[in-house]
Image (cartoon, rainbow over all chains, first blue to last red; front, side, top):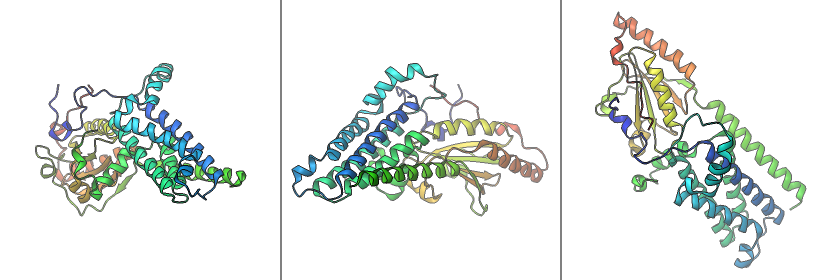
Length: 179
Length: 164
C-alpha cells in the first residue's frame, strides 16, 4: 500500500467509520421536505395573525407538525444520520430494492446538514412561542427549500455552509468538535 | 388565508426552489480562468508536499463535504494521465486562514496551478472533467515547450487512495 501524502491523510475515513449509501440522506430529506410543505400549507391556511396566548400559539397545528420535524432533525444531528428513523427505514426497506451505490460517503456531511436543519426549525418554534407573526412560516420555507434542494438536486450543505461558518469565525472555537 | 392563494404561494415556492437548483447545477464545476497574477507555493501551504512540474490540481476540502472524497479520487486519476501534473488535497476544516486567503466559499474548491505555481483556473464544486482535461493538456504543452523537453513522468502521484 502506498504511503499517503500528509495532505491527504486527514481526509481518509477514520478507523471504524463506515461509509453510508449517499441515496439514504436524500431519501430522508425528501420526507422532511414533504412534512415542511404540510407545515407551510397548514400555517398559511391559518394565516399570519397569531393568537395572543402562548398556549394557543403552541397548539396551532403548524407548530405541532414542525415540532415533530425538529425532533427528527435533533435525532439525526445528535445521534448521527445512521441512527435516524429515515436512515433505518431506507437501509431496511428501500436499499435492498436498489442496485449497489456507485460509492459510499462519510456520514459526517449529512449529520452536519441535520444540525443546520435542527437550528433553523428550532428557531422557527421559538419565534412562534415569542409571537413573531410569519416567523415560523418564513423559517419553515427556508428549511423546505434546503431539504428540497438536498433531496432533488443532491445539494450538499456541508460543502457550502461549513466553509462560510468557519470563515465568519462562528465555528472557530467549536471547529475541533468531531461530528 | 384563502386556500387558492395558499396553493399559489406553495407552487411559487416550489418553482423558486427548482430554479435555484437548476442555476446551481449549471454553475457547479465550471472551470473558470484566472489571471495567473497570484502564485502559490504548495510546499509552503502543506509541509512535505510539492506541486507538479507542469501543473498542480490544488483541492481544498472539508470533513463535512460529501463530494470532496469522490472529487479527490477523480482528480488523482486525472493527474496520472499527464506527466508533471500532481493532485494535492488540503483539508481546510481547521484552517479558516486558508479559506480567507483563497476566498473559498464552498468545498471542494480546486485551483489549477501552472508549473510556476501561478493560479490559472478555479473550480467550485465537483469539476467538469472534460473541460479540466483540456485545460491541463494546454498547461502541460506550455510546460513542455518552455522546458524544451517533455516533463519526466516520475513526478506523477500514486494512483491509489485508501478505500477502506
